[in-house]
Length: 150
Image (tube, rainbow, N blue to C red; front, side, top):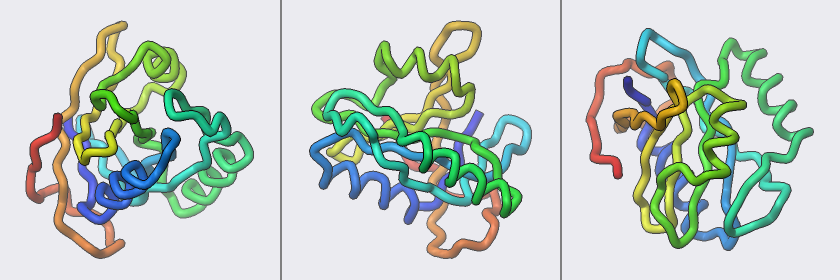
């Protein structure tokens, strides 16, 4: 199982987490190919809780983001958010969300660490993260550089 994401998309998520006093969040849009989740776009959605310890995506912006992505033939392959001052691993509240959204959850921290996870049969399963060093928005070739995740 693998999440494939462009370096510039991952960098944008991490930079936003570094600058934010609250948890950031959004969607990873793309496509699935077997056990690979290929990210074509990272889309930030405001955290309506405006909290440093939890997030909820703003519902109207969620729907808008999903509609726009689907209009371009993309699907939700993941959700991303940040953890401040703690490891980028699923929290108890994340587990509740992971049951509702059975996609890959990319979690970053403000120090540049990250991890990707899914919930399978009640167990958290870590995904490999393959970071592709492309600065283009052309469809991704799933081959690329594999970076170390947390």
